[in-house]
Amino acid sequence: MRRGSALWRRAALWALLAGALAAAAWVLSPGVVAQWRLTLARRALARRDLAPALEHLRAALRSDPQRIETYYLLARAHRRRADLVRAAVYLKQYADRGGDSLLAERETVLALAQSGRLREAEPHLPALLIDPQGDGPDICEAFVQGYFLNLRIDAALRLLESWELDYPADPQPHFMRGFLYQALALWPEAVEAYRQGLLREPQRADMRARLGETLVKQGQWDEAYEELERAAAEAPQHPDILVAFARCRLQRAETAETRQLLKDALQHAPDHFEARRLLAELELAEGRFAEAAAVLDPLFRQRPYDPTIRHALARALRALGRTAEAKPHFEYLAEAEPALHRLEQLIRQVLSEPQNAELRFQIGRTLLRYGSPEDGARWLRTVLEIDPGHQGARQLLAAYEAAERPPSVVKPPHAAPLSLPALP
Image 1: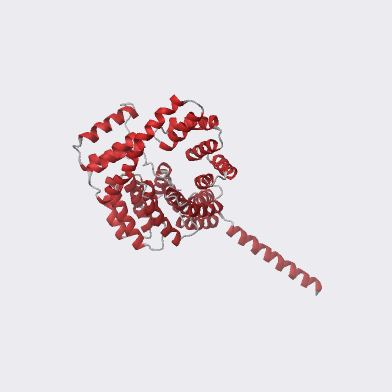
Image 2: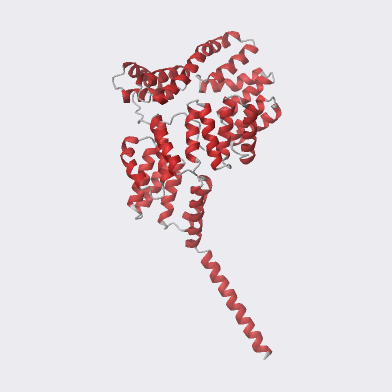
């Protein structure tokens, strides 16, 4: 009797073990692992959290290379990351494996829009918005970025308004509105847009940092400090956020803390332009003029039009007794200051008169001389879209293109993005 009972218990244990092994094999099967990873990737994409989304998608691809959906989601994630080359590769693999041709076509249109090729993409926009198939915010975001690239500010603002109305809980249109206003130096408008976005998603450290930066531009240092301190605590490895907080701490003469923040930022991004500029400002504040000049000289060669670089370099050279070298920098600043002040007024005007070619010409001409030449050329190209016969724009563009690259190099239109603050 005892022996039979023992045998029964042993058989039951073996059955339980076999069942557990079968369950584990099912759970750990490549198909199940891939499906689980895809679920996590979709959630990350919905949060616009691209790094974990890509990590889960790559894991899904390793587990089950035959799952077609993975290639589509990889194309979408890389497009959102502005890596359009990889996006195109994955989208082709999706199509080659028999993926839905309509989905592939929609994703291709969004890639065209996002890269600024609006002549090809824009005819599809009404149909996409009528039947977004759950992709409404993604459609809006891609086209808004395309409008940014083409400096079609009025079209961007109209689409942002529709996006906000159709998806009132989405923080992203407010973030992108703030991004646009910040790029155009419209600081009060940028502050309000970022605040609206943070009401909808308070954990967006990138948006909080942008708010802090715009508050700095308005001289609201105490509020900016609070926002940037919180953003840096939430994203301690994000170099842009660390640098923004360092700028605030430097203004408060917290030099040791500023130096540590800049050190951390440069550890993550050794070529970070603003981190190096602030490091030079710190050296100036501590009277280390030779060290400041050594940092500033390559930055000046990189961006000779940047007034903050030229001002800092002029101060360093003057303190070192190199007044003859400092003089042209001070002269440039004396010329640039009123022109750049006028530039802000012109940009405000063009928001209400988007088809005014002469306003756009003045903006482009000012930027060619006192700002980013590439941005200046972009504004001048929009002049010719409105008024193809504008001789001033044609002449300045011809001179810019002759100086920038050899005649044999043909650069496709909209190949380079507008120098807006970088999106995360």
